[in-house]
Amino acid sequence: MKLYNTLTTEIQEFVPQRDPIGVYVCGITPYDTTHLGHAFTYSIADVLIRYLEFKGRPVRYVQNVTDVDDDLLRVAGERQEDWRRMGDRWTSHYIEDMAALNVRPPDVLPRATDVLPQMIASIEKLLAAGMAYEAGGGVYFDLAAWPAYGKLSKLSTDQMLPIANERGNRPDDPHKRRPLDFVLWQAQAPGEPAWDSPWGAGRPGWHIECSTMASQNLGQTVDLHAGGEDLVFPHHESEIAQIEPLTGQPFASHWLHVAPVHHLGAKMSKSLGNLIMVRELLDRWSPDTIRLYLAGHHYRESWTHDPAGLEAAGRQAEALSAAAAFDGSQAKLSSADAAPSGSQGKPFLPDDLVSEFTQAMDRDLNIPAALAALRRLAEAIVAAAHQGRAVAPAQKSLRTLAGLLGLRLGSAGPEGRVVEGWGRHLTRFREQLVSG
Ligand SMILES: [Zn+2]
Image (cartoon, rainbow, N blue to C red; front, side, top):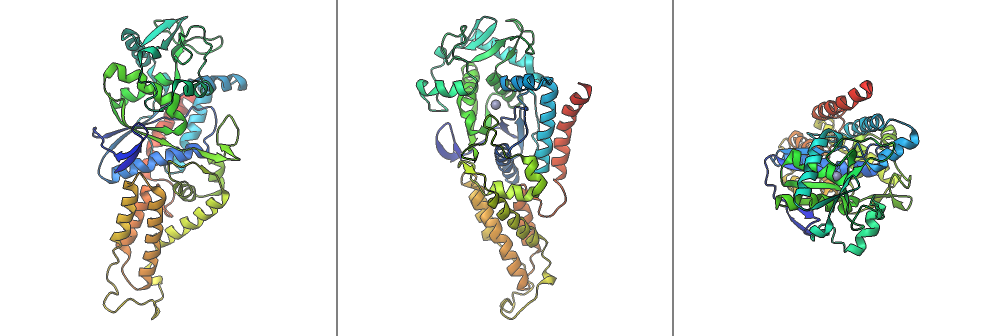
């Protein structure tokens, strides 16, 4: 299949090298509830992975939880809540939302704090390689040693600084040699959690968390690294800088980024407070309706939340479920509907619509076009049933393809593997909640 690669800026053949295919998707920073933007990003990853599996390629899916981070600690401080407990609480909330939406669970869901020794080892390697320097109890990446910085984001140094500053960079840190040098290990600040390290007590930087969890779980080159578009810079750019000088190999062969969802004239974000919560949508709409609403948007195009879109998705969900369950004996044959003599009772095989679906998916994961083929398939099934044709095989195809979009078509609750997989992850976070 072909996918747009942020690194090459081209739609190119996706050629995974590993078996199973290694996919890493940047996960949540658990200090608030799951919103529609999260649901869009993770549903896109879900559909892509389901489709790869459908094509016979097993996937090892890793998604992290950024459970120690500037924003998370700030919010925990403001709310006077233990940061660990708050993180576990919101991670549990996120897991419940993803399971309700029938999103395939990651095989591994590591927390940053699970891999502290590995992160410290990664930082030691960067220091030994001359890619980093120690100052004031912290360790910083030395951008002078990595001229390729910018190869993913295509930003010039001048363009980088304001964006980095918006996303956690501290340009005035007196220990840094250059304002864009980013922190690998930050010295303990008063009141913040800290772990021992060769440089004193402190905590890891944001970027080293993900590159360490990705390489630890998926090896030297990840087949596909994905996340929201706002992670291209500085997060993913910096992840590349932390890995490639040490391995001499690409950190990820393919980079996929999901466009943002807008609401009230701006990108949906915690800082702006213009969030549509997944939990609130689930109170009113079925999971299939929400999945169809999301599936109506291409992953590379930003879009604006519109309740009318949910209404339309609700009607689509009903039509698809009705076609999947349509019993031919219910059809009233009229002379106008009747099939040409001889075709009655013959199976209806909509191969052209099935291949239209897969071709759309193969062309840069064009889920809206695949969904359009699915809807035509549903209409064709009902029409064929009215003509007295055997539609059970076509209905099976409809269910299979709908399943690739995460739809349940009237089946009660999420798939067994979704319930089991997320449930396994949830247990870990809930245990912490109980024992903490
Ligand atoms: Zn990440």
